[in-house]
Image (cartoon, rainbow, N blue to C red; front, side, top):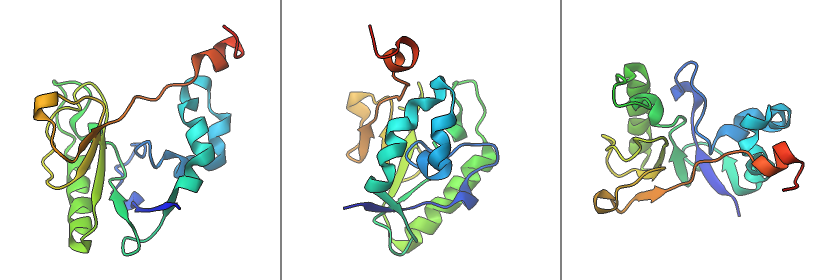
Length: 156
């Protein structure tokens, strides 16, 4: 069984990559030609189409914000809010809310424990402060290439 997910590249800010969950649907076969430090998605790319199906908002089980929330806040506390990414994100949220579909947002990076001004979203974060964790917030790991495979020929 594949989960049906909706996302829309019209809400993806210019020069920003899609969130990791959606990356294989953009890269497809090209993931194999990436340099080793970008091959962190190789294994996921191979199985992603058996896990997820991109579909219309009406048929979707979930909607996924097409970019990572860190693209709004930046990686540093000194970074200014990316207003164009924020505006696109809010537009996407409103579209999903009108359709009555659950929304998933990914928030990676060191400051991903910061609050998001969107209610009722399922948020996958790379950092969570236990007492501040909400019921619909979950941790997800940072993905890296297999160092032993790519740099040591699968031998320690």
